[in-house]
Image 1 (cartoon, rainbow, N blue to C red):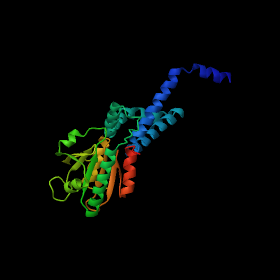
Image 2 (cartoon, rainbow, N blue to C red):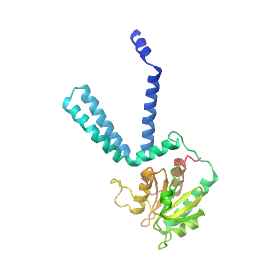
Image 3 (cartoon, rainbow, N blue to C red):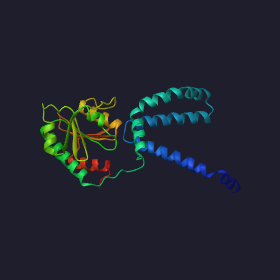
Image 4 (cartoon, one colour):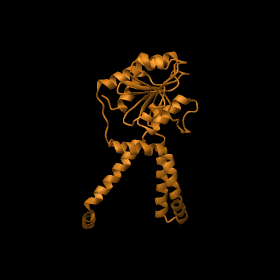
Length: 256
């Protein structure tokens, strides 16, 4: 008991603060990368660190030397692999919303989602492809500039008109914000995720791509199958019914 008392006496207040900060950083990173392909890379990196500690404890000199020499290369590779997530993390940190739920409780969001749902249902029935990006905290001005400005109140009829086959704007993305269609026919970056289903086309790859570098929520309607998909944080959920779509979008936006 005396030894435990001496050990506790040696622990300073700043040590607790140090541990708390590291814990919060790990929690924030896991929260940020959750449901994205990066979480598997994090598991792999964790296993490498575990192997290093085992090698140090067991005095496995060769393995320890190899891991130490691979560390600088691993850091460079990590920066390349996590480029979208690092960008999103810095943007989130700059907004000060890393630990916030960002709850939105207003009729504008309900109207926006309601019109998108009605449009998605009709587009899915008619097998008309669609790509709808719901802007959140991360600004999409650079992508808006690639399309045609609309600045109109969002309605199901307008969305269906935009995505009607063979019109000038049907191939691009529609960007919506605060109950308005900001622009249509917008060009989005394609994901380089090699794990994505090879059967998915350009619309889905663009949806995943924009969600990897921003906090946008994206709804996609497949032209070939009529399947409705939801994309967020680099992760895609396919073949969603309207009820499930509503619940998932509301949960992502923390709307009750």
